[in-house]
Image (cartoon, rainbow, N blue to C red):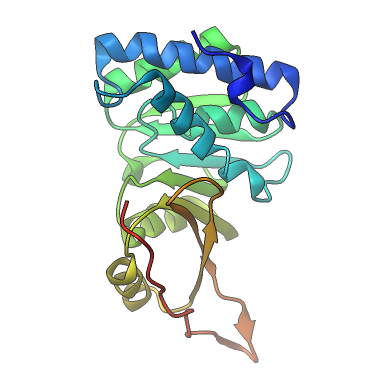
Length: 218
């Protein structure tokens, strides 16, 4: 069993309890459904959840909605739904067994702001303000999924690791009018990649993305 001490003290008690309960559910369901690697240790489940808390340090407006592309076992959708109770969180995945598990987690954790959705990201039908992903697909693919349904000011956040120079080049080649920012994640070798449309400059769009930087491999 996992203890609430595994999560930061700044989290409210009820949120810590729900994250603890989610970690226990993950371990239990993973034995049957292989939602994550079967080699994942008890500490590994905690680390997955802790890493996802990096998303909630970014600005998400109360009353807004976001999509988690390829949510898998509910990461980061479920930690975000726990930590952002005033934000509507869509957990999107094409694998039915994973959406069934996320639906069960929603029920067990009483997450009224979590909306599991089964289907391909290219067919997701709802408008959102932001979207998130945990190393689900290349940046260019994620940005295509995002821009199809997001408002113009919407932001994409991706948890990534390793050397992303090739992914960034591919992204800006297809979508030159964007801004990319890399945000370090405390206690992790990975980082958040923030992608947004560039602001208009003198009636023209900015086409100069920040240069890619090297990062240690995962």
